[in-house]
Structures are given as structure tokens and as C-alpha cells.
Length: 151
Image (cartoon, rainbow, N blue to C red):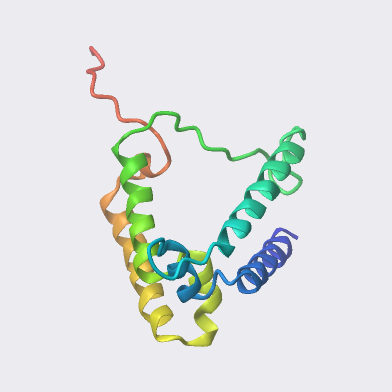
């Protein structure tokens, strides 16, 4: 059942990306080009996403647990550190340069556009490199203690 729900959610998400224009890197780059061919239409996409997410969290978190899982998996990291700034900065730079973020890139793969065929393998290589370079405990938001245990 979980696979079916995930597949349907992915299809709805992909359809939303296509309809909103987020799968078109030129539209995204025009949105980011404030001094040139600025296209503000993606602001409405973002505002819609924020509204749906806000309402969804308010409704879902009233439940004692998710329908298809034993518990909720929510972020626990509360401090702003170098990783919390560097990761989004790298993501934003990649998004601005390529016009793709991961969801729209995967949605656009069947179109076989040259940009997508370069971006997706580069994204997968970056994910693989992060898994190799960043210890598991840091990827899951656990902090590293620098104090000795005193034993």
C-alpha cells in the first residue's frame, strides 16, 4: 500500500511541476534573473507550495502517528551551523546555474533534454560523494561531541 501511495504522490508532484513550469529550466532561470528577463510567475508556485505544506502539517500533525508508518520522522537539528548554510548554498548555486532542482530534473528525464542528461548524473554523483565523505551520524542530524567521556 505504501508503494502505491508514494507512486501516486510522485505522479501528482511531477504533474504539478510540469503544469507550473518548474520542469523548464529557462523559466526557472528567468525567475532568478532579476536584472534581465525576470519572470515572477514562480512566486505563485512557491506561495501555493507554502500554503499547501503549512495546511498539510497542521492537519497531519494532529494525528498521534502517520497512517502508513509507526511514527513521524521530523527534523531534529535546531542549531544553525556551517552545514546548515553550506548545503542550501550549494543547492541554490546549482539550481541557479542549471535551472533544475532534483524533482523537476527527474520529471524532465523522459524528455531527454541535454541539460537534464548532464544534470541528473552530476546530481547522482554529488549524492554519492556526500554519502562517502560525510559520516552517517552527520547526515542524520546527530551532533559530534568533542568532550572526553572521562572514562
